[in-house]
Length: 213
Figure 1: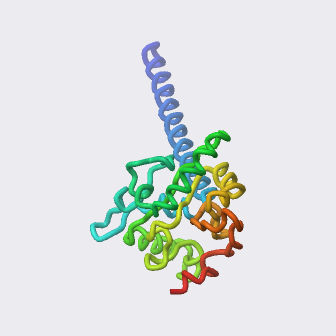
Figure 2: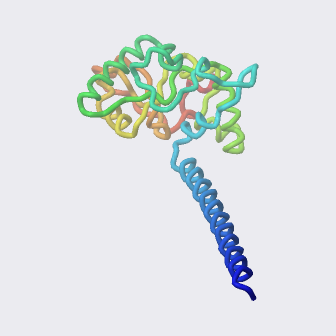
């Protein structure tokens, strides 16, 4: 075999090795990405998972920020997001007052979900039924549009975990109370809690008499 033929053969082997290596890298990258998405979905709370999955809803088929859909990291002091500014004014005032003092402790209160349109809530409920397999199980996590405190602007889901812990400890002083054991991020306004403390929590929304309407 000539020197040139040997060189071409060697080059072909190098080329094929490079192709195989690239294919392996692409496959590994896709596997890692899929695993990361799976882990993220597993570690997220049900409300977070549902919110992130609700890309479509409403008569026109699309949920937007106008329906209360929220991007990540929205401040309690935001003045643009309908999900924040459409909250009940007293709830929003209490939330922002608490957020000021939480910030003094180095904790930023963000709003993961606040006010929602009925269309958005209907889509979340539909997604929950699909995810959990039954209306009864979905009701443990998502209310109907007719009974949802979010649609009424009377509930806020907060983050991060540090903020949830801070509000769980100090929120009563602002009238902000966690309502459900299975949704520690969900707070509603109970002004009487400032003097009397928060009422006992329900295990989940199915125990809440408001959900039986």
